[in-house]
Length: 265
Image (cartoon, rainbow, N blue to C red; front, top):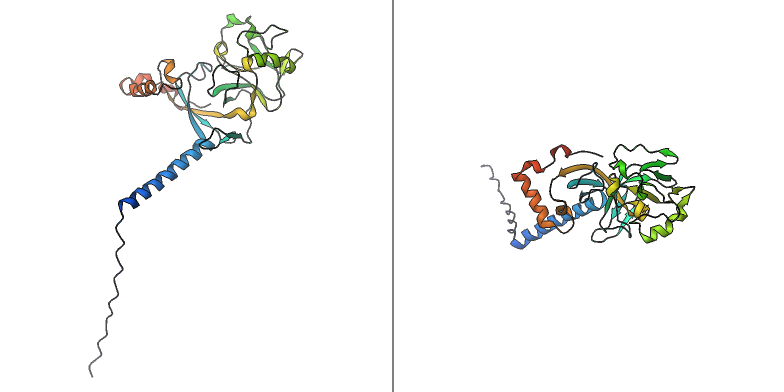
């Protein structure tokens, strides 16, 4: 008896997936970019920011044209698409460099970068340009100042009586006496006294008062680029000139301060 032939059943082939339409490709591309932008906003609001220095107030520690990476981690968190930000758990230490929102009486409204000289509770006085904190001279190897200006009013702080100096904001001049005790300025809670390293060219706490803790954004980590260019290139609104400065490096590599790259703070 011949063996029965096995029947082979043919399975129905799986239908081929429909080809992706142009709309599908655009949708996937938009979703990908959405996540990239969201990640950038989170990093920029929570972790680090890039900043460029437009003024000489921190020379020679930080130069005009230095490009910094600033860490916000633990200091401040910003809300994307808004100007709101909130302080976190870290507080700056004495002699630490900080980035902060400009106070109302400052000469400019851009964010500032200065060095913390006094923390809450400190008693500060400046005599002939020498800074004393809690009765002890502060060791400041970073200071850039002209010794011949030692007798100028701004080099002796806080001012005695009505001996105010030019450039002081009127509100600070009126409030200053209530923070002075025995000739020393007492830093109140949740506030900091900040000065630029370039003492002869710095719009700082001597002129407009304390930095509120809520104004502090972060602290610089390192210099990622430093470019020689006219000072006005780095001021807000000079986008075209700034782009030209970057392009000039391709032709004139010496415009880059190579030795400053990746300098940490």
